Amino acid sequence: MKHANVFLKIFVHLFLIIMSLLCLLPFVMILSVSLTSETGIQANGYSLIPSEFSLEAYQYIFRNPTEVISAYGTTTFVTVVGTLVSVLIMAMLAYPMSRSDFKLKNGLSFFVYFTMLFSGGLVPMYILVTKYLGLKDNILALFLPILISGWNTMLLRMFMASVPVSLIEAANLEGASEFRIFFTIVIPLSKVGIVTIALFQVLTFWNDWYQAMLYIDHGDMTTLQYMLYRVLNKVNLAKEYGGMMATQEKLPNENLRMALCVVAAGPMLVIFPFFQKYFSKGITVGGVKG
Image 1 (cartoon, rainbow, N blue to C red):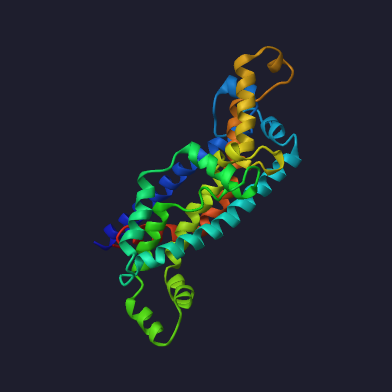
Image 2: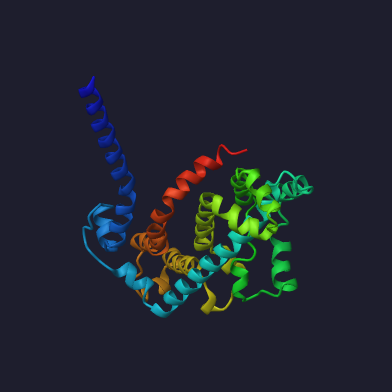
């Protein structure tokens, strides 16, 4: 029996190692193709090792490094500031909904839930942001329209509902204000949920290009994703229509697509491991809280 258990553990570990390596293969493939010349891809197809090493795709993307650096800076600012403000507001919204003694709990919960089912539409949102809020070509327009997520707010409410009521009552008896209870008791005890929601928001702000397309005309406030989107559209347009536009310069195609993935997703692949333990625990706990 003892040898059987040892054999089973070895088998399980080997199986998990193999599955982990298989999960890494797509990322290795993307990186390899991005470092392969266009002619090499056309001749040999995709491979885990570049058949003809080339940096032409990255040279095309970074031929104007100032624009790329500016886009990285804008996206980083929007991601950091947007995430901090977003998580704070959603936490402050979720907290009263998690309190059973809050009289407007059901009404507020319905209001948040309603936004998950219906929205005002694109045209009213555009008019609100540009005309009434005056945020056209304003960096606030890059994160303000997507600042709050109804789903993330409801998920955060589940975490805060698990905070022992006795702690809150004891703090009230000691004369603590609601703000003090929120920041010194509820927030620390909901850390796993808050970090999980923060990860969701980081990915949302980092990957968003739609807000920049709608509200930003000035190139110095273009986000990274929208800049890469325009680069890809330019190449696709040149390949599609050919003629003078395509013959002026040799444009990459498949390797450019993969290089765009590396440039766009690279920072997130570095950040994700730091959130992973909170993310896994947060999803598990959040799925069973009522």
